Image (spheres, rainbow, N blue to C red):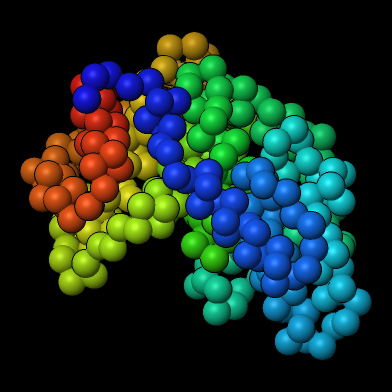
Length: 296
């Protein structure tokens, strides 16, 4: 495969159609008129989960809201092709969906404050400048900012398979750090969609040592780490060239850490990729890791 730009790496046919089909099925269940964009797809899952919660709670008014709401009704929360959420910790939910906390758009959701919106705009602009704009538009259209941290504090971010293309993340005052973490979680969302779109089934009983977790991981988790961290390396290397101030040593430390992690993972990558039946998907993961190792 010839050298691919970040935009080309994630331009994989079939994913958008997979999202549209998924959205249309949810729209049929809810009985509302959802569109066909990536944002519609992400919001659809919030509406479906919210409707289920409301039904279990026998909250007829809330259930009706989830069944009639569309993206057009949420423009007060939007920032271009994204919805930006900044809930209070007390508003986060825990349930059978996930062991980690999450948040669902609802009738009482407040718009994110201007400071948070400005940070997201700057982070998306940085990601777009370095070739990751499409990834964030298609696979992080709903962004949920959690806790503001200092650069020297641990940052947590995650994505849920039950809420595809929503990203939950802590953040700092630096847009480059937020961009890095949005790219990381959007990469997980992309790979989940790609595996589903190409009907790839990975064995659960085959494991490889993951230096990122320090423990053996199933093929699925190992490949997710290789793919997501390779994209953060590609972004951080470019962003670091224009960055100033305290974020420069932060990005440098990230690149050094990833260089060490990939050195430990490379020997297992080819075997792990052999379980991916779709050539186009397998080639993209391999190519991304190769580029990350070259630039790290």
